[in-house]
Length: 318
Image (tube, rainbow, N blue to C red; front, side, top):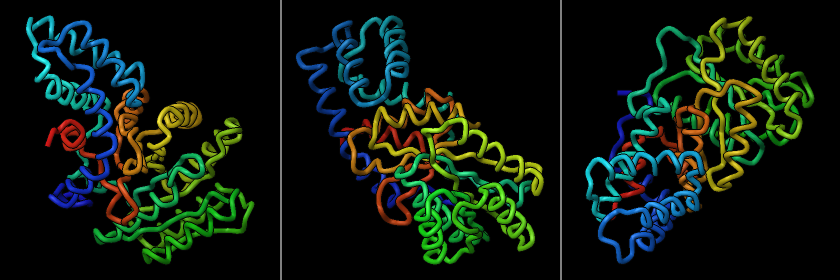
């Protein structure tokens, strides 16, 4: 069993509730798209294209999904509109698996990387610090020793927030004064973590996107300094995006992936929005796996992403 435990009934309920707005929105559009039609034809596919684009799946991803359904229609000759749901579910699940999105229920910390270092990036306001706090809570709950690094020294509130999370969860936070060099904070954090035999280190970084060159230089410096302490660090560069911002999240994802090498995604705030389609689109655009999704305020509402259950929740008519 992995760090985050098995995907159980409670997690499924949280997922269903969190995706309810997106599901309702997609369904009402789908129902209109196939109204009066019994078979999938060009009209239905045109309507479906519009449904997916307006559900924030993104143009490129939508065209890819439509192309796959067209191939299936050409192969099977007759596809009933009643089968469309199941087909969408299959095609989107297979698309997500091509972006290396695994079901993370069984994910565990690799034995050969101790401590496992996660560098967290993302603009301010997307739920970055909250994601770090919830991750720290879940790792600690799994019996792991966690260290947090407050390397967003640009904003006083960022350091305060991460300290509050540290106290709440009961894990140490390494910090310096406001305006300190973020790489120096990362260096101190990793040295403390190694000295205290920590299992996981999560480092917060500044979310300044308006100055991409400065951001790029800062993240490169943090990575280089981290490697001096732990040659394999960082093991994960986790980009946090706010799912409720729809197309804005796509733009942020594009910019951050140009600034640094992102290798996993956390998409937050899905519970308050009908824009859950961004999960599919962003993963496909970046070819980076979605690792976590945020589905509510509670500590357990940050879930490891399970692609089968995600599409099941989205396209299940129950």
